[in-house]
Length: 149
Length: 172
Image 1 (cartoon, rainbow over the protein chains, first blue to last red):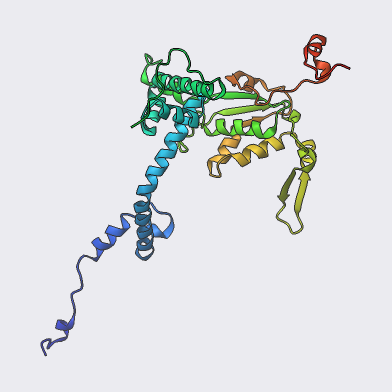
Image 2 (image 1 turned 90 degrees about the vertical axis):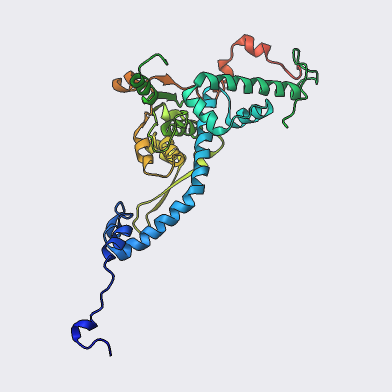
């Protein structure tokens, strides 16, 4: 037997429990209730929070896109067009501006957005004319056979 | 407008406007959609749910709204007093007679997003049964919105020339 006296039987447990606990609690300080103070409750809450944060990285991209779309819809309604009509006619006119840039233009460059809306409106009127008219090409247009690659 | 100072530009961008809607002979649902869009701020390109960009909306003549179809008799508004046997159902007519602002208010309440900002947005909605608005609200109004529905005219509101000019299928 190695430990011959009582004092040698005492184990020295890990010296850094405080810092391991603080590592978890520091992520929980802004929570509500005892989850921000008590380690056992905080561990579960912090794990859930990290899982939500991981999942939210994909959801953030979806939310940003819906926000851009609602902003573009608001701006286009200010100019008398609706969002689906605007996007369809911009695509038809081969203007490949994405929704992020369009929403930024709508906020900071209103005149550029107005010009894009007018372009889309012209394309829309041309589409109406082609659908409802008599099949003749409108004057001044020399080729409508331009497609996106 | 771009030659103004940045602070003046920001103040003008985020200022809260007051819109006026006349609900005479209009369907309350269409009035409510217009109100809900402007209360949330979805008519602005700077919209964000957390930014509190909604405007004030004043609806006048809410006593003279016009439901289409048989909704005055068939549309039911339900509520419960939380006591047993306290389920109440009233028709649109009965509710309108009891409180002329309730139909538009409930319609707008149901069209707003179900979050904590809904109550704040409802506080920014001002309903008046007739067209006499108080002084302080009249001073705040910035824009009147066009009515969603064109009011049809009765036969006696057409002039004799218009009646004669209307195309007929056959002459007796």
